[in-house]
Image (cartoon, rainbow, N blue to C red; front, side, top):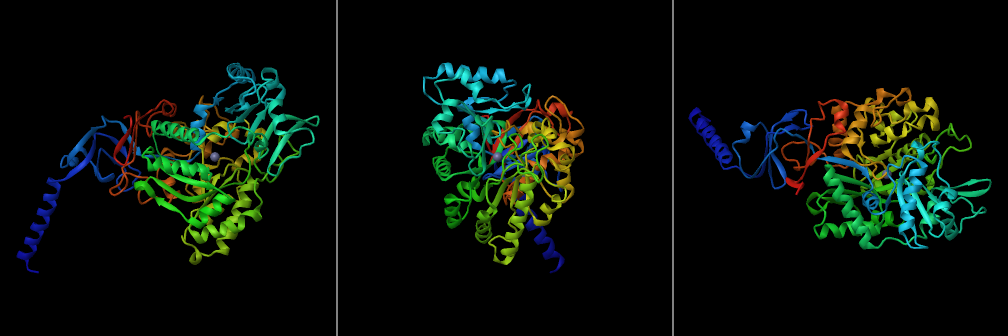
Length: 557
Ligand SMILES: [Zn+2]
């Protein structure tokens, strides 16, 4: 090409480019922001342009002037993050917590009983009283409530109140009677009926809860839908742009599906179905649904509940509990019931995520994953890199931590669990086992990423509590100690990734989400303060001021 032709061509191309820029029409232009992009090539910016729900420009205010925008949103210096994702929550439970007797924050046995009594006084005789949210570890003494405590305030009403973690409930005598639980009732598999002097004391752990729960009127589809929508409403207000719902049954999945069809859900929603069982079998047959409703709804995951929780001593440990040498926890599933499902999941391109808290549960599930990966090699899988997850990974033998990265298994962890549990974890586990407890930094150093979540309604489910817990590793009041292993705290950059790009990766979405980059979905969380710079305690006072999903301001409206 001669130089005249060349300059002609350059001129032509430049003209095209200028022409496009001059006429550049975008839907929304966000200006004057303090924008953290989570993109290493351009970590910080002032302005973002959005067209058709996706980011078309990230840069300076000056460079953004070239755009004609239908709408301009002046951020007035506020801090903008890629839309936060809660990688592990229970959305129906979050909504139900708002609807039923909410026992969150009961700080003594007396306070707990007073709240229950208030409800009993307002409830007709014989009617069930159900609620959730109590944790005895802050009471003095930190002991479970008993059936006798409840009998004093509720004789005519069956009462069934679930601990915040969902792994234990207290029932009064009326409720036990309806369930037919007496001194001769044997523990069901995966559960425990706690007894004193041979008599049930009212505490039911894990699967033993079903003995009572199945007698309670099941919420109607309408009540379930209300719980779902109230839960989502709360999440959006708090600044979550995506939730990864850690397990549901078919009836609830139908409700979610319908709510999407009727345009009632704005949040991005990744759903897991519980397995093993009929629902999981049907799901394996039907296969995944990916990015339905314009990138809002994905079903590609089976959730397995493998052990219990630490608070109620249901987490399966390699050695007995330090404060209850007669038990080392319990497994809720038999390994032989999981093998075939795991192999089928690999062939069908289904992700598996397993609740494993204790070091024994973590080791066994890593073994099972590893065996499945060997039995179904990459060329026989629908997805070569299956990105299976372990939910919680709370107490892991230090020898097992590097196995996660080696196997490509993602730990999905909830920072708030550490700052709730470390008050009693030392009593349950002793000092030695705390080396591998809530070991975020050890996971990162071994080459893992961490999908960050809240496990709400087990915890409160607020992004700022999670971010604070991850970077401070102190209680909300600033308490800490040797047993807390402060060296396991993460940097603010790492914490930001735990709630943005890493959850995106853990859901196969890193090309569409998790950072503020051209081509990605326009999801942002806009905060009242710069949590990357302010003193730690200020993080807890930071508020979500805007939730933007696909370029649309969904909060406030
Ligand atoms: Zn959970």
